[in-house]
Length: 299
Image (tube, rainbow, N blue to C red; front, side, top):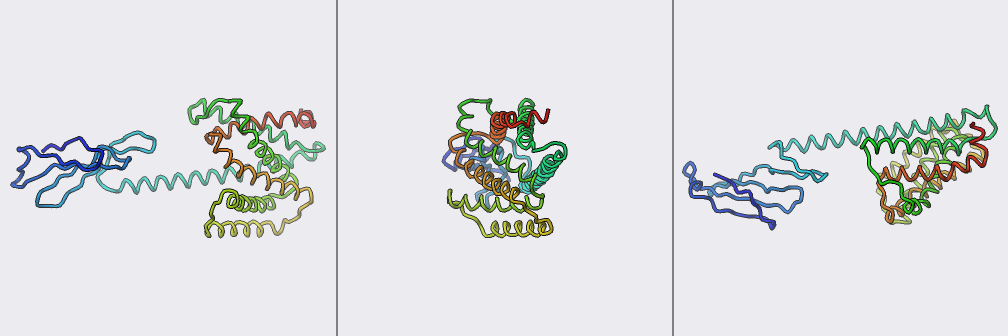
């Protein structure tokens, strides 16, 4: 018996069987095809129905992938969905671990850089350090683009002009973060970073009407309590350190909240944001590092 390979877009199509296929083992059969309005399934589902029995459902022939490509169904058992769920969970765990590692490493490296040269020069090189980091970030994303790992549009002056207000807050966030690490201990910086997360969440609720679940609020409380306990033996804060830390909280919250508004008019991918942020950061801060003597001191 042959099963038809056409499907109506409205749902079910019942095709009349040929005379040769109407009798098999003394029983009458019908060819039935069920269409599906679900965009994730094409080709329909094949049904074989005995007139005196229940319908036996076979697996879809073709499945649409998330990237728009199509692949044939490789298994008749539902275990494939479990494997996909396990794979997604593993990817999430790996991504979270890499993000945490990079965040911790960045704080420790910046702390080391911001305090390692104090005995060598008078003043600081905080702005120049931010410029070096921005240049390194641009080199990394450009290399990744050349290798075909990521993709984003080439530099456009109009896009840069629209993105400039966001980048000013980005520059302020980087500079005040470096300055706060110079004048505060890492545990105290951690405490204020958790306060920044709470400030950002409150701002999101006020400006954009976001809602916060109780579990999220409980997580914030646990993180803040843990950071305070970790810093209780190292709670020496100078007025200069407190100033830079509060400035970093405001710049970071302002950047995140304004970014949510700016992305509605300027459409950039995540790597496009990285590219424009660091290119503009270099253009804004390098002249400042030259004028205040940091670049000359470094040379």
